[in-house]
Image (cartoon, one colour):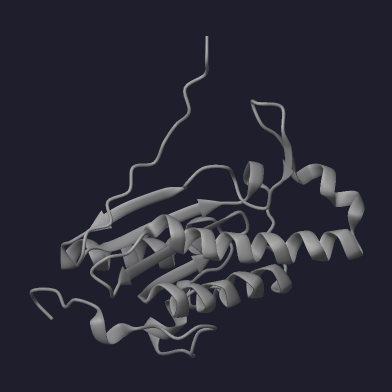
Length: 190
């Protein structure tokens, strides 16, 4: 009997925002160092230039990433956007480990069902992708993203977490990557 693989169905619909979540391999805390977090920030900048999306919110947690984006082209592919981000970080991480910490590489070794072996920075699969069309849902997602470090006990207020857009929203300081707040929908009240 063949094992059934879980698939992630993506809906690349014009005008939809996307709440994206993707995780480090086996839930390892690979995003605890400034170096690896900066790789993700740089990869986001690269992907934004290549795939034309507005970034509304983000948080880098020790073992996963949450993004809220809004593609600005009528035709786009979330899978291509994620591949740009993930591959960029993957290549930088493997190069760094091979040069500086080769003893860590076995922790990233993934033996696939077909017997092939690969080193992975990110968990296999597409992660989580939820299309969002309602302004109130957009704002609830932003709150959810920003509250992640507080819920985990990593800080007491969202704007204290350095790897998040929460400080931008709080007016505390500019984040590590600029946000595209001009395209952010307003709520009925706002």
